[in-house]
Every structure is written in structure tokens, then in C-alpha cells.
Image (cartoon, rainbow, N blue to C red; front, side, top):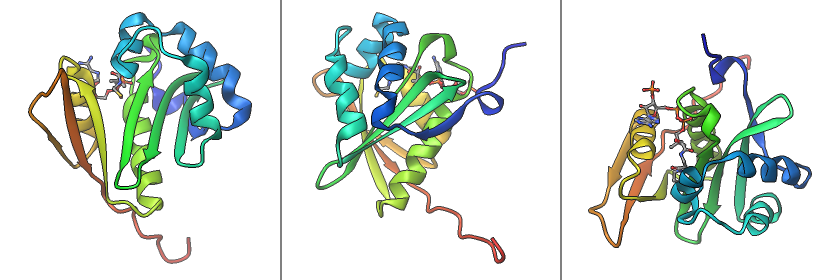
Length: 165
Ligand SMILES: CC(C)(COP(=O)(O)OP(=O)(O)OC[C@H]1O[C@@H](n2cnc3c(N)ncnc32)[C@H](O)[C@@H]1OP(=O)(O)O)[C@@H](O)C(=O)NCCC(=O)NCCS
């Protein structure tokens, strides 16, 4: 039986110390997954790495299995909206890692004071659409435009702390 992410992977914020693990994860990803995430199979990995671990207007969340980073979710805070993006390495896809990351991205975004986020997907990316539809309570997708669909995700507020917490 395959391991599920919930009992083997932990999600935490990426820091500058995680750059090497991030580059290693990206090197394990297929050209198809990289293309779905970046729109190209040959992204500028160093730029991406630095944008996640060093920029003040972005949060990078990593899903870890031991010392290996196996999934990365990012929230880029534009002036008018936060934007989600996500990548799970191929060997860990369909094992709950993406859903776990999306929940953490939603929580971080709500904590930052936002109640919605956007996402841009290539039109054929049915996996990412299904992930968002199954993980978020309200999601709408635009009509395809220039090969892309835009998604609007309405976020649930974080649960209020219980008395005594
Ligand atoms: C999209 C992606 C992040 C999904 O991550 P994942 O870890 O495989 O997703 P999960 O295992 O948590 O799946 C959660 C739900 O999403 C849906 N889903 C995920 N992958 C799917 C697929 N290939 N086909 C159909 N539904 C899919 C299912 O409803 C799934 O629940 P289930 O497994 O109980 O049926 C992953 O496929 C990926 O990294 N793709 C390449 C990058 C990308 O497309 N990024 C999005 C653009 S920014």
C-alpha cells in the first residue's frame, strides 16, 4: 500500500536555507509537470527559487518527506490579489500532497487578511482544476483565453480558536 501524504509529509514555510532542496525537487520533476507549473519545461530555476525564499511579497510553502522537498505551493501577493501556484513532484502526485498544500496556502492567505485568491492554469490542466474544486469551497473558472483559464478561489475563514486553546 502506498504511503499517504498525511502521515508522511509535513508542510512548512520555505526559507533561504531550503534553496538546495527546492532545486533538487525541481530537478526530479518531469518536463510535463514543469510545463504545467511554469508554462515552460525549462524554467529559470534559480530565479524561481530566489523569488520564493527571499521575496517579501510571496510565501513559499514546502511539503517535506524527511529531508526531501516533495511539493511546493506559492502565494504571490500582488497589489490587488494573491495568486496561487503549486507543484508536486511526479512520484508524489495523487497521494494527497497537493490537497494538503492548498489547505495551507488558503490558511496563510486568510491569515494575511485576504478572502480570495486567483490562479492561472493552462487549459488542458484538468488535474489542477480538479484539485482546486475538491480542496476549496468555492471556485470559479473563466472561459479559456490564449490557452489559459483563470480561477477565482473564495477562501474560508480560519476556524476561531476554541476557549482554552
Ligand atoms: C495539480 C497537482 C498539484 C495535484 O497535486 P497532487 O498532490 O497530485 O493532488 P492530490 O493527490 O492532493 O489530489 C487531490 C485531488 O485533486 C484531484 N486530482 C489531482 N490530480 C488529479 C489528476 N491527475 N486527475 C484528476 N484529478 C486529480 C482529485 O480530486 C484528487 O483527489 P483524489 O485523489 O481523492 O481523487 C499536481 O498534479 C502537479 O504538481 N501538477 C503539475 C504542476 C501543476 O499543474 N500546477 C498547477 C498550475 S500552477
